[in-house]
Image (cartoon, rainbow, N blue to C red; front, side):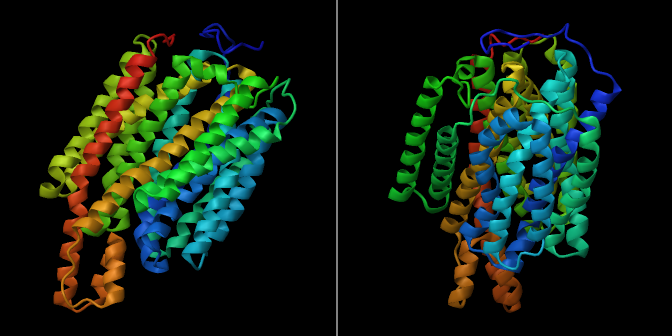
Length: 511
């Protein structure tokens, strides 16, 4: 039975699934696991990629950001197409393409080709992610079961993030950086075999016509906005960044106006009038900004400043990933009794504390504060993501689960872009501003060292001992100068997420 967006739903009396439904959940966790492994592995592989391919500072950010940029531009489109043509079908097409392109990315000879491969991964990844969450909505109709299923689904992100540094670290210890992309192949092959057997197909029974204008407007909204944010973070305020932002917001206005006027909108804008939907979307976005931004600069700090190998740096962050998983699962019984406008801010208070630990103790005590900080931060992120994702799905009609899931995933991927572009851009700006190069450096070496911390590391290894040591000491000090400010900004973003949850989720049902 189709529900409207304006009717609160509890669904506690809906049918409960058996073993087959939970087996389907295991299958749907595979692409989630893969994407989270891929994101974490890439962060840890970035120093070696920077050394091998010698990207500029902008290219280094693009290697990470182009994937979520393309993803963010296509998620709503792919989610809507999944509603129309079949969510399982989109999942299988996306898995096939993702595995093939991952193999190509592993052997990219230049930074430009790696960026292109990452863009293609974003295209196929846009088919994967909305399908997994929307299929959960159709499989688990009972809300209590769905809440647990989403907690397990969300924990797959954390599990993949915990597994990624270890697997990636082992690979990077013994093989070239390209080996981290080959992980996709053995993960997705079981999905392609098991999904047709265990995962039922689902689609919108009344999808309406394909609205090509809305598809174009959705892409024309997301891509310029994200590009403007990246340009602002890397190059500072400029007319170019402003022009892209105005273009994106203008296209967004046209997109919203069209959705309000057409008979069968691509995205039901009435969903955003509900605090349980719009508030949960914002909590998702800001939480991911804080998490990805943390991983971006901490992975470099562990490997380049503190000298840990990729594998040991991965092990250092495992306790935080495990804390995220435990928090995501433990919050399920709590959320049945305590309303989300209380649970989410309480959880995010831990994440604020984690950032403050980094801000005020990292320079003095090395690795241990980072381990403790990520454990504390992970508790809040794990709890917030589980509850917010469940609220997003529960707020949408079952027939439009793909579009609603796509909005959730768009927030996630936009948060990943913002985390890298804003927090990464801030720490890069502080690094460049605080770096005092020693005298006697060749011009090309000085340029490379001034671009990125990895560039300074590579240059220092090739210089005579005394000059190389002086360069590296200056680079490490400059990078560290930005850690405190970046951490305080990250803490502020988490505070904003907690306030939004406290204000907007007061009427969200907890049962």
